[in-house]
Length: 95
Image (cartoon, rainbow, N blue to C red; front, side, top):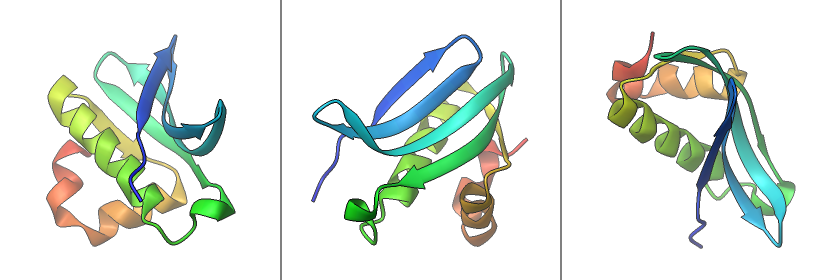
């Protein structure tokens, strides 16, 4: 099943998320430290989407955005930190 990932940023907070009927079912949130760096601080996936690779898809969208915008990433969230540890191909965006 394919899910549309949305991105929202306001002030110094942002999120990549999947929504259905106006409700967020999965999200990866971040805080902007400056114009070129963010801290990924939380990932949450609704149990209805468990096991579908949604968390990894959110991280993939964040990494692509970070590359495009030349933003560096600090993974504070345990999920994001673990994924960066497992996948060397996305580490180019690490701060």
